[in-house]
Length: 222
Image (tube, rainbow, N blue to C red; front, side, top):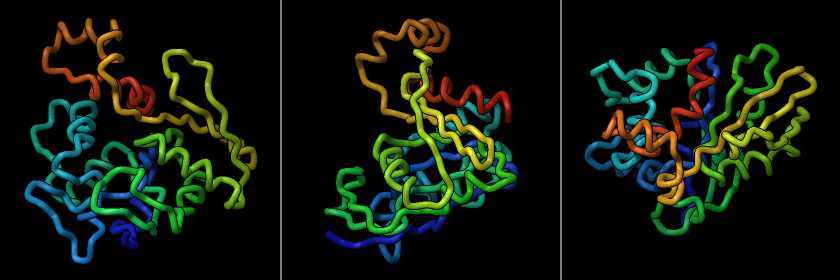
């Protein structure tokens, strides 16, 4: 077990951000001092060469743009263009081994700046996208440790079964929450909408399809 700190601080919040993607912590090699980056890595959120998030976001938000994000500067430019913030729930944590799984992490210090950001009087953030169930669970754990009242309730929308609402009464504000679960093989086979779109676009993968459904309301506002 080793103790690590988050290499990218409290997160990155472009001005006028509408959506916030929240994870747990980067992989071991990004948090090592110095970082132990591999070929193809970007030293930034979701920068691992085997992580598909940047590919998915580009496919959904910039399908006709040929340039790819290759550096932290490019990533932040993409975020500014699409009003999308990134932050992780853990600022300090113990990690067992060098695997990237959330089960290997023991929280030491939560990122309470996330709560402060979404509850600011003039915050534009309306959508929270948790990149795992573990990240969402950490967020719920920290709610009672910060000063602004937040009420989390599941929605009744059957097409978005992993969505929740967060009410912030003091700000008269409601945020929509999505938990971006990894898609299962069974879910892929039993989703008629995906199968129909797959006939039109054979290169469409299920994860990109699923994220596009979650990002649709964000795209409309953005």
